[in-house]
Length: 138
Image (cartoon, rainbow, N blue to C red; front, side):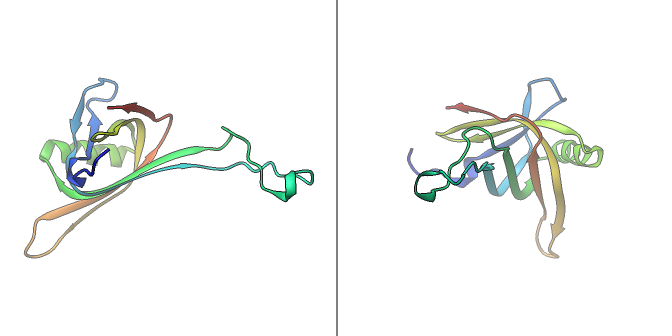
């Protein structure tokens, strides 16, 4: 994979929930995608040379996505705001060019709005996974 523009990562939300139609949520200027897997230690007194041993496939997997930028339009703003206040778990799709997509249920864990006197209004949000996330290679 060659170097990519960060601006090419897309964040999409399903509209309406269950429709399998995703719309680009916003103009993200900064994004972070974190995939984590909790390790489950099974080390015991007979572990070879006292090295830690882990149980494969046993840990809890989580994904989080955070980003900031400007909303694409009033409709995208309303979709996100409504999902936050209802604390809905919605299907989201994160597209990483030349790598793949992550699709699955997320809940909006944080939503912030900000603005400077002489600049545009901006938002930031954090999504937390709420079920199985599917990776599809591009």
